[in-house]
Length: 48
Image (cartoon, rainbow, N blue to C red; front, top):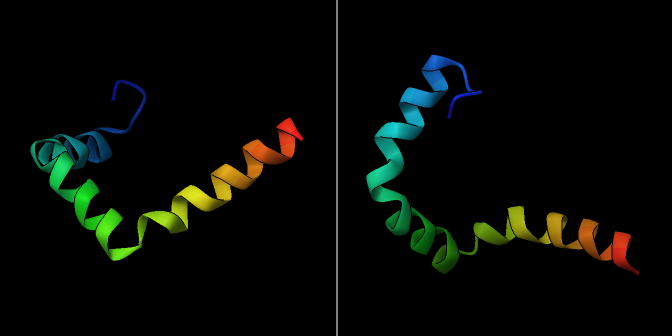
């Protein structure tokens, strides 16, 4: 959080208590795969 601008750090600090709930909602809705698949494919391309 020290490298973020103060406005972004403030938003993340307000969302921090709800992190697990947000993670579960993203997992159950399928929205998390939008972020995970591209990163997974990038790592796999480096490894293979």
